[in-house]
Length: 415
Image (cartoon, rainbow, N blue to C red; front, side, top):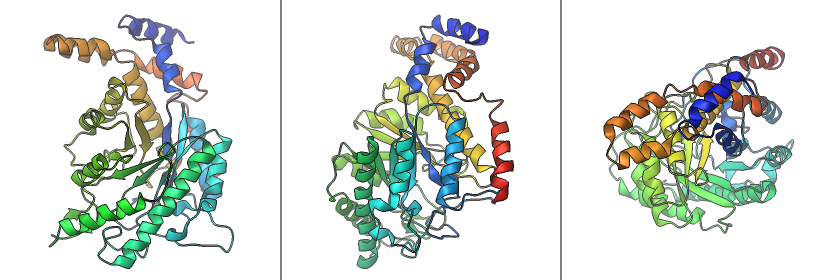
C-alpha cells in the first residue's frame, strides 16, 4: 500500500468514504467485454464490409481474422484490465467446424461451444446478440420487412438466439443478456411509419414466445435515433423500444448512449427508468457527433452515468456492456482504454460522498451543494485508482501500454 494511497484514503475518510470498501466492491461488478472491437465487427461468416446502418473506420494493421486470434487478443486485453469481466458475443461470431456452415436462422448452441469453453475456463458469463445486419437478407428492413419470408427468416434467427442464450447461461452459471437491435429504417421520408413498427412489434413478440427461463435469459430491446442509410426513419425508435419493454413482462430496455441526440444525456435517463424497471441494460460507448462508437474515455458523461448507477444503489440492477469499435488505432489499446475508463468511472462514483450531497440537496442548501460538488472533483482519486489496479494485479495507467507495444511487435504485426 503506497503512501499516496494512505494519504488519499484519509482525505476520503473525512467525507465518510471507505476507499478500501469501494475497491473491494468494484472487484466483483462484471462488465461485458464486446468481441467485435477486435475484428471491426466482421465476424466469422466471411463478410468483408458492414451494412445495416453501421460502419467501422480505419485500417490499422493486426485485425483478428479467426477465432483463435480474436480470443488471444481478448485474453491480452483482460490481462490489462482490472475487475470482473463477461464476454459479449454477436451471432455472426458462430464458430463452425471445417466444411460446415449454416445460415443464421439455423444456428445452434454447438456453434458457440468454443466461446462457452473460453468463458468457463475464466469463470465468466456471456452476453449475446442476434445479428440483424451484414447479411443478404438485411436490406434496409429485417424484423419489420413487409416480405413475410424475410421477416420469418429473422424471427427464426431471433428464436435460435434465445435458445443459444439459455445454453450459455446454463453452461456458465451466469444470466445471459440477449439484446435485440436492428438497423431497420428508411433513407428518405416514409409513407407509412406505423406499419413497420407493428410488424416489428409482432416479430419481437414471436421471438420471445420461444420458451426460456427468465432467470437465465434477459432479453432486451435497444433503440437508435438513426443510422447511415436510414437517416429519415428508424423503426426501433426510443419511444418504440421503451414502450415495448414496459408492456412485455421480462423484457428489459437497453440504452446505448450513442443512440440518442447528442444533447440527450443517458445519465439522466438511468434513474428515470429505474423508477419503473427492476432491471435495465446499457451499451456504453462515446458518440461524438452521432453513434460513432468512439473509444470510451473518462469524460464527464461517462462519469455521470456511473454516478447515477451508484447513487441509485443499482449496481445489481444494471447490466453493463461496452460497445465501440475503432479500427484507426491499435485495437488492443482501444479495448483496454474503454474498459479501464468505465471501471475508473465506477470507482470514482463509489468514492463520491453521495449521501452527503443528497442531504444538501434535500435541505435546499443549493449553494453549499455546488461548492461541495466542485470540491470533490479535485480529491486525489488517481491514487485510489492506482491502488485498485495494483490489488487486481494489473499495471497502472502510465505502464500498461508497453505491454500492448510488445504484443503488437510479437503478434499483431505478423498477421
